[in-house]
Image 1 (cartoon, one colour):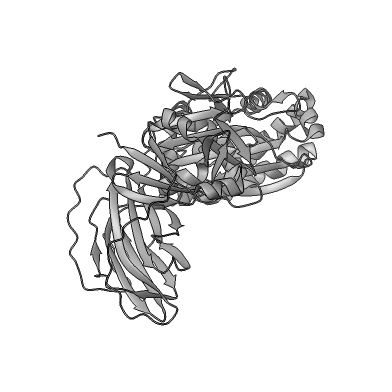
Image 2 (cartoon, one colour; image 1 turned 60 degrees about the horizontal axis):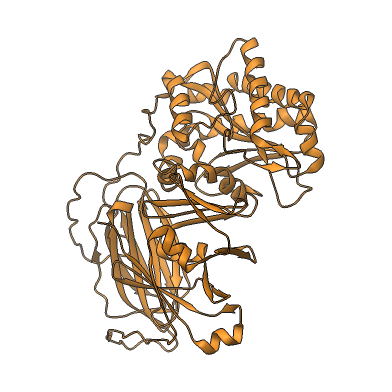
Length: 529
């Protein structure tokens, strides 16, 4: 059944008059009967109301990513996905186009969308009211708390199985306390500590018993409340808090592998500060279009090269140059050098076409290579940024610029509605799997060799090996990395990257690194030899 989402804006006319173009309005959202008060910023321009879309989607459990570098935004809620090309003034989904003129604007690096546009894109039912209507509250039994302490007054949960998501909500009296959370992957639990908080009249444990969560146990001690959530399977967590008249903290727990079997009810045990979780299933990389190989079948003579972007996706465009063209030329040169040295080399594209994420996975996984290298050009708001850097897969961006690179390189794949958005939610299951962790040392060695050899051949600054949750590396079950060969946003470096002689030097560095990796102890250890 299609979800119905209602957005109500509650605001004071006096407030809007006082703030003019930007009002301190509140957004109250009702999703499947649950009212969520969002802190998303609301603006009024020429009689039209706009909302900061990234903040709004974070609160309602959607995905919104705005890239000022690419001048694009990707929005997803439920099964609906849109790509907003701000430079072209159009929103695109499944061949449908909606003009954006007068419906979006950017202020302080925040993207604002008009409420009518949100209604048109996602079918949201939107109403506005000019008088703030108090929300009736269900009376809660009030314990005798310590002076100054906040009270945890309730725990709620909602299962959204078609999105593979469970939302756990902690309700408070007096405001949301400061809190920290930590995931224990070995025990498959998450511990949340709410500081300066008392436990109200809440029964513990709370039995959830859905495909993602078993039980939630609560205990008050030393002036804080500890909540322990027992996971089922590998879970990705997104957290947030909402102040106002109904203060709460929420945690969206998202399955990284779809559960198809019926989940048996968990026995309700006596409260424990650290409950024993349900047995954790063995991690498996079975999310790829082809089954993952064992390391024994990896062919030490096969290399797969992935020239980034292509076709209608130019990648970075700076100083008159397109990323897709430069990286294809570099990849062809690497291919020719390696073939001359006796290697069997395959490329995900040989011309100006765009392979989908599935296409890249399918080719790479069918060849069982000992190396997969995705080749890209970099960009930065700082025109002086320069150098070569390499990324290996990881659950969090680590290293200067890693977050921006992950957002930029993942953005094109969000357009592919059948695969990429699912992969964004499933990356953690791969990057924390025993299979991936075993190849991690080898991938890092490959990356280090690429950085050092390219820097040595070209004189570019070696920016090191970094981590990022890159979709294109997510289902590659062998040593894999993504290399950013230089910055197109740097005018002098862009000119070098476009030179055939400089591309030859980059290609020679990558090829030398791959050949050195073939003889490395890290690869031998991975392959058991």
